[in-house]
Length: 487
Image 1: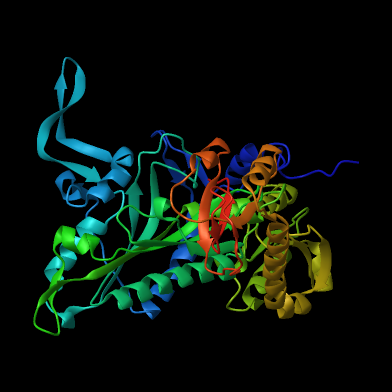
Image 2: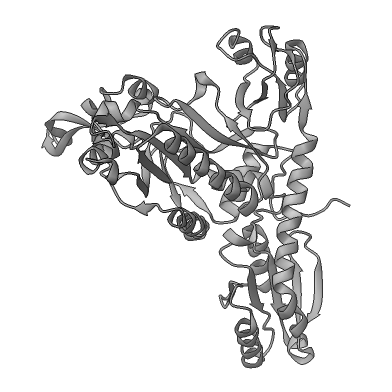
C-alpha cells in the first residue's frame, strides 16, 4: 500500500514542482503581482528573523556595527570601477524619471533625472564614498559596517527565494589599514558563514575560493560556501570578498598612514541573502513538507486542543499548563483556531514544526501528551513531566538527525574523477552531485564545461596535495576543484 504524504508532488517525481509546493504548503511565501518579486509571508519572515538574530549577534560580537545607506546609487558612480559595473550592468534596475504625468488618458513618466540612479544591486561603491569621509587617519581604521537591507538584480528567470528580482540580505563592508588585516577579515567572515551554514542550519557545505574567472566583480579573492541540495545541484550559500585597494582607489578611501604619507585602505565585503531559505528547503524538506533545524524554527512545539464535546475548559486549562511548563529556550504556542485537529496537525507537519502535541480528554485525565515527531511522524503518548524534561534533548536529537542524514546523503554524492571523458559521462548519464577533480587554473577549455551545463564551484580550502592531470588541459597540477551543476 502506497504511503500517503502531506504534499501532492514528491521530490523524485518533479523536484522543481515539489520545491514550489513546499513553499506554498508551509505558507512561507507567494508570488507578487510585480514580475520576479515575492511576498515573504509571516511564517517565512519569522525564519529570516531567526537567521538575522543569530548572525547579527555574531557580527556584533566581532566588532561590527549596523548602519543604513541609500538604495539609490548614481549610475556615474559605477563608472569609477569598470570591472564592477561590467559585472552588474545587465542586472541593474535604473530610475530615469522622478514623477508621473497624465497624457492622453495615461500616466507616463516625466521629469527626467539629470543623473540616472541605479536601484542598489550591492553597495561597495556608495558605502565606500561614506568611508572616504570617515577615514582620515590610520587611527580611524578599521571601519566595520554591516547593513540589513533589500537589493534589486533584474533577473530574467526567477524562482522564489533562490533567484528573485528583489531579495533581502545583509552586506558587510569593512576598511583596513593593511592588506593582511583585510584578508584576515574576509577569511574570518567566510568562517562565520561556514559555521552558520553547516553548524546552525545543518547544511552540507564545501568552503573554498572561487576561480579567478568567477570571483566577485572587482574583487581580488572571493571565498564561498557551496552547499549541496537534494537534487545534487550546488547552491552558492554565502560569499566573502577581499577587495584589495580597487574600490578604495575608485572612491578615494585615503588615510594618513603611520609614516605620515597618504595611502589607500584595503576593503572587504561579504553577504548572505534570503536565498539561504531556499537552500534550507531543498536540503531538509521531505515529501510531507518543510523540516527546520531548531535554532531557526519559529516554533519548536505546537499544542493542538482536541475538543469533541463540552470539555473545552479542562482541555484549554491543561494546554495552558503545558505551555507554561516548557523551558524558556523552547518556543511553543497553542492553536485555538476553529479547524479540525487533523487538518491542524497536517498543516504543522507541512510547516516543519519539530513536535506536534494533540491534547484531548484522555491526555488531561492521564496527565500525558500525544506527541508526533515531525521527522518520523511517529506518534507517542508521553507523561507530561517526561515530555517537558526531555524536550531540549529531543530537539538536539532532531538536529543531529537532520545533519547526519544530510551529511550521509551528500558524501554519497561526491565523485572523484580523473579525466574530462569521465566528467562528461558522469553528467550526461544523468548523475548529479559534486565532482572532485584536478584543475590547473586559468581559462583554457572552459567551454567544455558549458557544454555540460557544469561550472567550477570552488577550489576547496582543504586540498589533498596530490599531483594529477587537469581534466580540462592535461597539465600537471596539485589543485583540487569542485565541479557541479548549480542554481
